[in-house]
Image 1 (cartoon, rainbow, N blue to C red):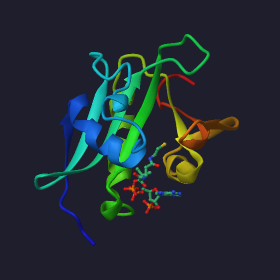
Image 2 (spheres, rainbow, N blue to C red):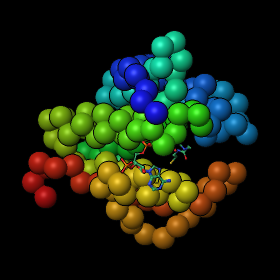
Image 3 (cartoon, protein in one colour):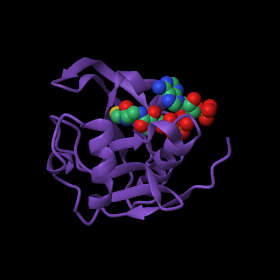
Length: 154
Ligand SMILES: CC(C)(COP(=O)(O)OP(=O)(O)OC[C@H]1O[C@@H](n2cnc3c(N)ncnc32)[C@H](O)[C@@H]1OP(=O)(O)O)[C@@H](O)C(=O)NCCC(=O)NCCS
């Protein structure tokens, strides 16, 4: 099926409903806000099918857990409505986030704590597993996935 989807930057608040519905239904809407959501460096992308927001993803300038290097970009809140999955929407959002990080003056690495259920999705875009699988309470098994941004000299 071919979808005519409009991808554009949105604000953090617009992501909350899909984050809640798809990623954190066991929590409140307020719990779906991430600490760095409203930072000037943060970037949120939404996929719109006419008036409906069918996908979201966020990029936050954030050091990897346990480190202090802030030349590091974190992917969070990747979520596509279940009726729109497998059609390229999530991939388009993820690529837009990667492209945004790559355009920064000093690109570094992009990372996420990815659910093992969708590890293959991130690997499809060049992310590589680092370390063992770990469990996030009430959410499930995750793995650290890292992608080096092309052009950063590494
Ligand atoms: C993960 C998610 C955002 C992917 O979005 P999507 O729109 O279904 O993905 P796409 O159709 O754009 O897939 C892009 C590519 O990744 C691949 N892919 C997607 N999900 C995959 C998976 N679970 N395992 C392996 N490959 C996968 C697709 O085959 C596609 O490859 P292709 O271009 O060769 O066809 C979506 O499945 C989702 O919202 N899942 C539930 C929430 C979730 O787990 N979010 C991630 C939290 S870390």
